Length: 404
Image (cartoon, rainbow, N blue to C red):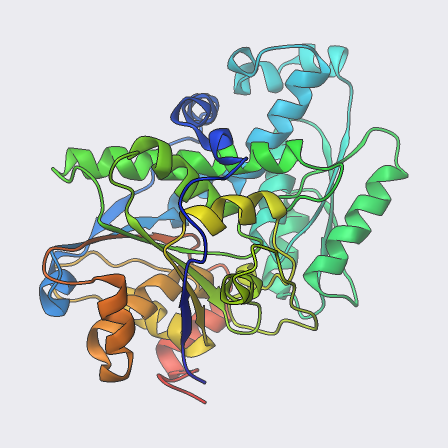
């Protein structure tokens, strides 16, 4: 199976939801995250050796395997959304509703206990479960069929009630919403949106913005004013929209060339961009891919509203692209730091390697504008969250390059 790609279909202006990801909104979320004793800025790996080998100025990979000890970035969104929900319920400002208050006896006296429902392929559910446990709340997690036992066990270890459903991810979202609606003090914490459910997904996106803000600050500390290119992966699109929305406000006159990556088995954003009609198109079925975190067939309309105006390219990537990235990051060029990345986190590096080294994708490389002046920022959004798959790829060569 080959890589497919298309240019963005619409002008850069016109997004109704873009202001949600303003620098000030993200600053507020980052301040909240900094209130946690578990908080630390995750590393930005500078791959200087790989940059020289590929002939670009710089390659930087944000390594989220260190985030809050949970091996993935997702907790940034779930924790901020839960805090915003509680702050709103108590008529408090989020700036005064950090970790010390949320874990105090005062919270139970004034707020009581809620049950936070969510659907997940793994990392998001673990983040919600972890946050609920930290705050003395409850969590119920629904997982799609085929979910890894490791993901399931990690969620249960956080004290959540978890179950694997005979359904895909998108149907699990609907199950979570139904169950929450029928539960006293039940709340859905999901990063996709639908009619009547838009506020919480927005808060989750703003929470994701902490990662983008950290990366921008780290680049500046390294003498890089801004990246020329940003590669970011998408499931429902909320992470990608959060990153691009934040950068659109941070770099208003010099927005980086933005490349959105999806799994070929779950590529609704690519199909929506290819249709060029401005509408969001869905993908049905089981959505089987090693990129479990990207196995979503129904994009968030809020995310699509931002992405269709801010993204430069949409790329549909077969599984071998992600596996290639896992191997490159796990066995780096001499002198470069090793990044232990899961399949969903490594697809960006896999694509970058492919377009720079494989003559079949020279048209894509030229279209994106990758050359000796390019500084590329990528996000490894998870570590080896599925250790068995990770070892099969690294040790046994599973999903080889260019596999049909």
